[in-house]
Amino acid sequence: MSTTAPAPAAALNLSRTTATAARVLRQLRHDPRTIALMILVPCLMLVLLRYVFDGSPHTFDNIGASLLGIFPLITMFLVTSIATLRERTSGTLERLLAMPLGKGDLIAGYALAFGGLAIVQSALATGLAVWLLGLDVTGSPWLLLLVALLDALLGTALGLFVSAFAASEFQAVQFMPAVIFPQLLLCGLFTPRDQMHPVLEAISDVLPMSYAVDGMNEVLRHTDMTATFVRDALIVAGCALLVLGLGAATLRRRTT
Image (cartoon, rainbow, N blue to C red; front, side):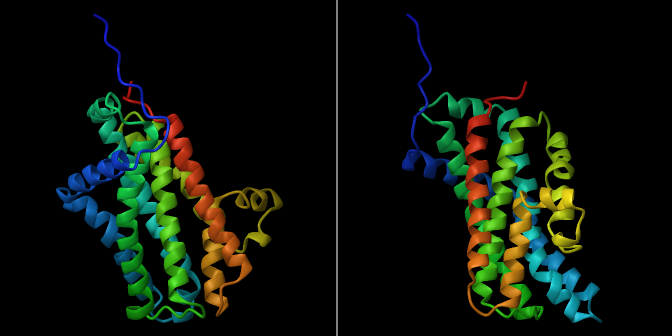
């Protein structure tokens, strides 16, 4: 008698997706260090930044909002890439995909679980920066929260994607200089993008972190939601969805 493995579902299944998210959250509940890394580290970095520029609060206002989106992106990238790789190297991913669970269900479940933590992380960091550290913004703090959340979701998507190409946790961390650092240097945080070399400016125009920083700057300068802000937010959200789709397409059962 021959047996065949169940074929993965072609479309997303809500019950399988939520079950995957619940399993990931249960695992994270028993890993307080990872939770602290995701939720507390961005807040601690903002506090450190505020007092680094204690004598120049205007400087904190200029870059604090941008880093409010960048810090969650970096932490979610690191945690998600390592957690997903650990699932594969331990054989958990192979066992899950032998069940009636599609790759899309798995990726969506991870995105849902880490997205929930991203909401908590972004809300704490935004509230801390605006109401306790005195970050002066012209627009609504809720718009800051929106961009910070989109950045965290983008970091989650990038982490899920690059984990497919890493053979160890060390390699997963090594992807950070390749994926995150170029965006950090070219996003306009250190110098306006229109003052860069034309080649670098052209590269920055296709990097999602550039639009996250631009969106934060729009909130700093304008009281109302602008068309530019909407464009920037949609680009970041679209990039996150695109990378999640690529992550589902490139997901491997195990590390060879």
